[in-house]
Amino acid sequence: MRRETTDGRAIRFWRVDGLRNLELMRATQETRAIPRRLHEGFEISIIEKGAQKLFCRGATHLAPAGSVVLINPGDVHSAEGLNQTGWSYRSFYPTSADMRDATSTAAGRALPTPSFSTPVIQDRHVARILRELHGLLELPKAALAQESYSIWVASQLATRHADQRPTPKAVGREHKAVSIARDFIEATYAENISLAQIANLTGLSSFHLIRVFTRQVGIPPHAYLNQVRVNQARKLLGKARPISRVASETGFVDQSHLAKHFKRIMGITPGQYARQFLVTQPEAE
Image 1 (cartoon, rainbow, N blue to C red):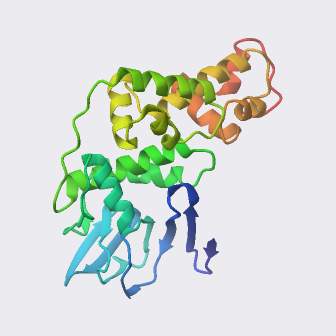
Image 2: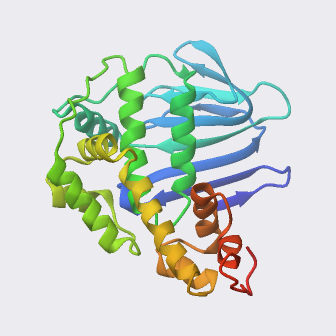
């Protein structure tokens, strides 16, 4: 649901079914003061523009652009902009069970729900992967990347900033599991495959699979999937297939999604690549 306002603000809420119905929100040019409130679960936000003045746990905290705001379940808090220009931010609302399970998965043992005593975090690494995850959760057909980032983000928050920080389980060399994962990705690259599917095939936990796969292959499973898709797209473009059809046949959301990953990996657009083979593409790049 997206709500446009007369003063230029825009607020959008949505949920992701594949991630336990996780609720998300994106707000731009927020200028209103947010009254005192509390949540049953966590509220995790990334400040994209402007600055937020947060009132939480009896103190005032400043959250400029690039900050991560982390509110525990039951924490009463309120907020307002630092000035009249307001602020823009993206928020996640995971449940206590979501955070507890992600932290337990990272540690390889059952742990209680984490708590965070610092409501405003300055951590460029965590802010970047939170921002990337939020953007991914706006896309369809990105299950593997969404699950991978969700688990990684939660584990990074817990291991870097929780009051009781778990130690991740040591990474081994499960060569057979990685081989199974690679074979599955290469055989089903055109489908919206999930991390859970691969984890079930390998017998590893999702978090452990990501770490083992990354250690042996050099990139995580979702990045490997994009590499496979781009390589397949190259073959089809060399056969004069229309770019929109190539995007569909290789598992990308649409032509622009293909173009984004193709250019990042290959350095040129799909149209530019196709013209190297003297193929005339009727569609825009």
